[in-house]
Image (cartoon, rainbow, N blue to C red):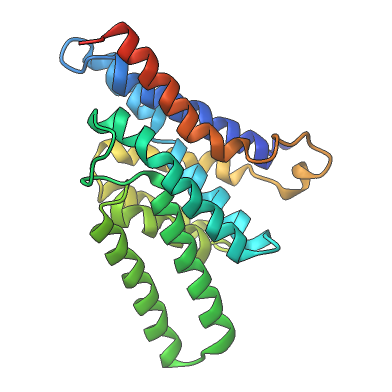
Amino acid sequence: MHMTLSRNQLKWIAIWSMVIDHIGYLFVPQSTMSVLYHIMRGIGRLSFPLICFLLVQGFIYTHSRGKYLARLWCFAVISEIPYDLVFSGKMVARSDQNVFFTLGIGLAVLWGIAEVEKCIVGVNRCAAYLLIVFGGLGTAVLLQCDYSMWGILMITAFYVCRYDFRTLLWLFPVICLCQGWMELIAALALAPVRLYSAERDQGATRMPRGFFYWFYPIHLLVLWGIYKWICPA
């Protein structure tokens, strides 16, 4: 029997790989426990590509793209303080924005591409694609979002290659490699992506509504609280 994965199973893989990554970042000193640190951070590289893939699936099947986009930006605001506490040690840091900002920009890019596909033809379509994608890339760089423009490219690649997995097999590793050798591990996320089956979602037990969104800021706050309790100085 061919093994398949449901949307919820992909979400759980993304969640636990993210938790392992953040635990490694906060609690495993790179200077004295380098091997364990890089193993945990390497496992964490699987999370973001899976979230990007799930974002694209959500965009394709959502009943309201406007509400979907508003939800992402709402959680971008909610998650910023927990994110800054964990990754900068400050309540407010302007140097880096959490991953929900990246996802919000990425969804806006997908929406723009979808509108172009419906309304524009010929050479003008290609020009419109480039304008929208480069606009998204520039916005991610300007706001200093997590994963920067490479996150937007990942999201775009999943959408553009949604019917062409072979192209994704070489394009996605190139995008990962451009971020550094460590990020090349993220290309392994294509394995569970390939096993995804929308049919598995039918009748499957779903996560409580909003759990996948709320988990991100809450787990960051919990980890930060534990860290400050263990290392109060």
